[in-house]
Structures are given as structure tokens and as C-alpha cells.
Image 1 (cartoon, rainbow, N blue to C red):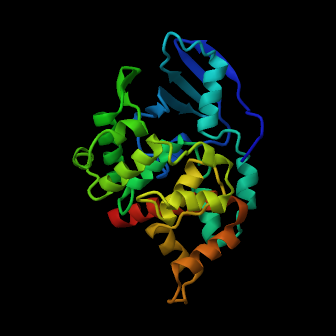
Image 2 (image 1 turned 90 degrees about the vertical axis):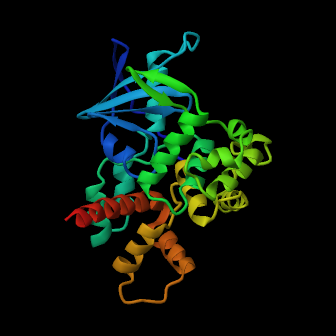
Length: 307
């Protein structure tokens, strides 16, 4: 966990827009890096939700222009809304220090440069867990389609800057539906696991918030006991939902990078040995290393395929 004070200033509160300082931050890279799947790009701006709140955000240089839909009884001041955004986008993470702590090798150096300003956001725990259960064996574009279908079918519609967005359905809402209904969102076999996990969360058999106090090993064990959660999904939830910055999810992209770039001459490598290498080599901020390697590999891989 990081406990640095937020470097947040509110410059204006006019036309319902906030201007928020966001140094060393790249909004588009952060939202397009495969850690969150529901934000919609509108020109140079993005619309989405943070929890139950509809949010409009665009980046102009080192500032963010924001609009957050408020209910009349919210009573939140502009500074509180700015803090909400700053917390979500992890603007308090000491990114320069984090990047400096990552290994210095040709592969990591290229990925770090490519991903400048990419931050690991703080997602709502249930939303993060449910989304990554749905992500198993799916590409980012497919996960986005599933996320949107689930939000439209089971979430709550909201409006922001004349654009419709949908909040992510809470666990009890999904627990009250059926596997058949979930399959209509494109989940396939994942529907059964998501429904079973939603029921456990709704009944508080799995208390996601209380798990925040657990050490990494125990948290991973608890997550892996949930239907549809293996090591990769558990590490994603630890990294993006619980801010366990050392967690290093290994999917197809990352396994390929590790094998080809770090062990080009070794053919017999187990998943366990790769996980052990990643934990030891990338260290305390391994989650950032993973996200940079993943985003760089995915984006440059797309370009090669188009070429």
C-alpha cells in the first residue's frame, strides 16, 4: 500500500468541470492497458463509472478535466470529487520511484519507456473479481464486450455529458439471476462460475472487504477457493482490486515474453518456475513490471499482425 499524500489541486469549478493536476500520468495508456474494460473513448475523452458514479474525464497535458454526475443529496465538495478521481487513478503512486526500482534490462527498459505514465488503478473489489472471472481465455476486446453486455443487462443506467454509461451490477443482483441469463452476455462456461461466486459474495461467505487485511499468501488462497478463480485471476484481483503491487499475473502474453526474452534457450520451463522467477526478479513492484511488459507486448504484437 502507498500512503503518500495526494498531490491534488482543484483549479476551477465552472460549467461542472474540475481541473485536476495529474503529472506523470497517461490516461489513454492506463485505460487501454487491459486492467479495466468498461471505459468508452469519446474523441480524446473517456466516459465510464467509478463505483456507482458516472464520470467524464479528458487529459490536456498534465491536467485532467473532469465531470462527475452527482445526486442532489451527495453534498460532496469539488475537492472530495477530485480526491475520488485521484485515488482511482492512483495519482499518489510515486511512479518515478516505482519505475526506477524495476530491473534494468533491454526488455524491461523498452517496456518502461513505451508505457510512460501508465498507472495501476484501484478498482472496486467485486467489479474487479467478477470481470476477471469473465476474462478467462478471452482477448481484451471480447472482455470489453462481455463487460458492456453485463452492465447494460444487469447494471444501472446513468448519463454523463449526454452519454449513457452503466454501473457494474452488484453481487446480489447477479446472485439473483440465472446461468442462462448470464450466458446471454457471452460468458459461455464462465457463467456458472460467476453465478456461484456472486452467491458466495452476496451471502458474505466471501467477504471481499475484510480480506484486505490478509497477507498476500492468505489472500491468494482465499481468492483461489472461489469458483472460476485460478492463480492468474487471483493475481489480477490482488493487483488491480487489492493494490498488492508485487502480484505478477502470468497469462499467455506474459508467459510468451518471459520464455522468449528471458529464457530463450530453455525449452522446459514450468509455470511454477516462471512464477518464482517473476517474483524474485521483478521484486516489490512486480505488478507494474507485469503491466508494462503486457501492454507493450500486446500493442506491438497488434502492429506486427497489421503489418
